[in-house]
Structure formats: structure tokens, C-alpha cells
Length: 187
Image (cartoon, rainbow, N blue to C red; front, side, top):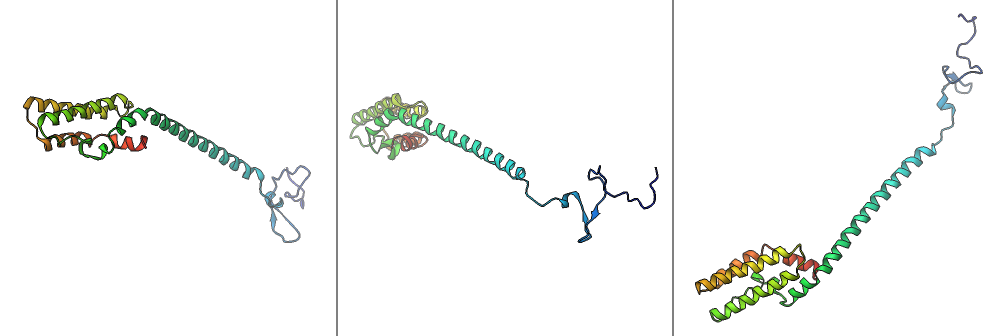
């Protein structure tokens, strides 16, 4: 199909869907496009959608953080309550956890007196082990068991080397988490 001369193919018609080329305005002879013909304005959806998404993400993360904090706090409170008997048993011998070997007796005058003190020490740690929460119980039992092994060795040999027995007990007690547990849950 041929168009008669002089007809402008870029002239808008009543069926112009914005597919024609740019036209110019009389004022500045700059080409107008469909975008430039509209007023420059911010699309409210382009701001609202990311803002709503960001708020939802912050709310979800905040809720998860709060739930995690609440669960940890509740768990810590339960452990503290379960440790009450353990803490009371530790309090029977105040300051023992700060001493080498948790107060392992080395000052006895004779073998019999020292053995009696050591047996009392073992008995005390066995009582603490019965009251200890499950998490710390293996450490407490290790202290009582080490005391038992040392006592058996002294009873068998009928001699005592006080510095060596203290070093053996200190080697066991220094590896336990009892002081940290006590500091966290008993005070």
C-alpha cells in the first residue's frame, strides 16, 4: 500500500497506542515520548512494597530473636533451680573451690587422722554428687572417685606423701567445670 504524498506516517491518529515515533512540541522542539509526556511522580507502590517487606522481615527476625532469648532464659532458670541442692552442698565447705584440690586435706598430724580427713572429703563429694544436676554430675563423681583411689593407695601402702596426693587431686579438680558452674548457678 502506498500513501499519498504529504501524508505524515508519524501523525497521531485516533488509534494511536503510543507506537508511533516521537513528536515535538511547539515550545522547545524537543521530542516527546510517552514517559516524558507524563508528570514526573513517585509511584507509591514502589515505596510501599519494599517497606512492607522490610518491616515483615524485621518483625520475623525480632520475633525469632525474642523466642530464642526466652527459651535460653527459661532453660537457665530451670538449671539454676535444679542446682539449689548442689549449691547448698557446696556451701557446707565455703571457699573450698578456690583451694588446690578443692580443699584436699594435707595437714593431718598422723596417718590415721589424715586418712579420716580424706574419707570425710570423699564422703562430702559423694553427697555433692548425689545432689548435682546431670550436666555437672560426672565432674563431681570424678572428684569423689579420685579421692577414693588416693585413699585406697594410702591404706594399702600405709604411707602418705602429702604433696603428691595434693598434686593428684589438683590434677583432677583443675579439669572440672565445678567452679564455673558454681559461679554461674550458685550465686
